[in-house]
Amino acid sequence: SAVISQKPSRDICQRGTSLTIQCQVDSQVTMMFWYRQQPGQSLTLIATANQGSEATYESGFVIDKFPISRPNLTFSTLTVSNMSPEDSSIYLCSGESQENTEAFFGQGTRLTVV
Amino acid sequence: DAKTTQPNSMESNEEEPVHLPCNHSTISGTDYIHWYRQLPSQGPEYVIHGLTSNVNNRMASLAIAEDRKSSTLILHRATLRDAAVYYCILRDRLNYGGATNKLIFGTGTLLAVQP
Image (cartoon, rainbow over all chains, first blue to last red; front, top):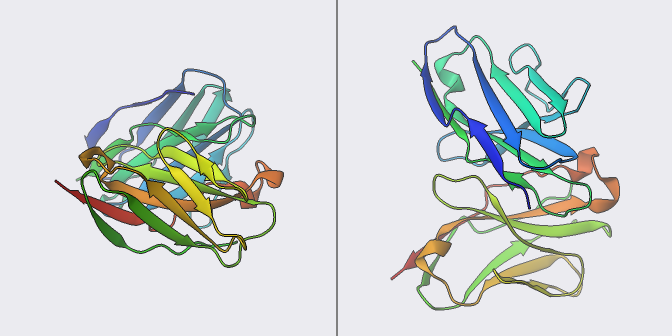
């Protein structure tokens, strides 16, 4: 199994600013993903964080708004840029290994934009 | 992409069995059936997965129909801690890292457990 830690756990930010969320895994994982979960909704996949290359974004999400880094097999960051109140949401990181059949999730970062 | 259909919500009484259904009529031969659950204010957690045969683990059992077009997650004795949203998800394990292997969440079933 893997334990995924996210920082910060919550934040309140001013519109127009940016926030970087960190995701640390306690073991190497092949795949890492970033999700968004708006209040009362299911999870929506933002992108796959690829080690050493640009992230792969899902439809409706772009790199300029959600730049992602993944410098190694245990760490990734998601930045929410030029925030607006519509970006208020929970952002979750997940990781999984090719050998495993289950994905592990962080507790999420609750972002409020005012 | 093969999709799943689940009831929006279900209720159960504590210490009784719960059967959570999932329909996946367009499932492909290489799709595994995965179940995750999300407890309040937490990230999702893996519950169980299977391909064709019924599966058991310490958390639950997964019963898969013979034609694989539906499955049922069984919680043998519901506890208050099992109150969560349960997601049934198809994943193509032969396409690891590909578009059809990503963990895509539907709306899930909100399970309420009454004491």
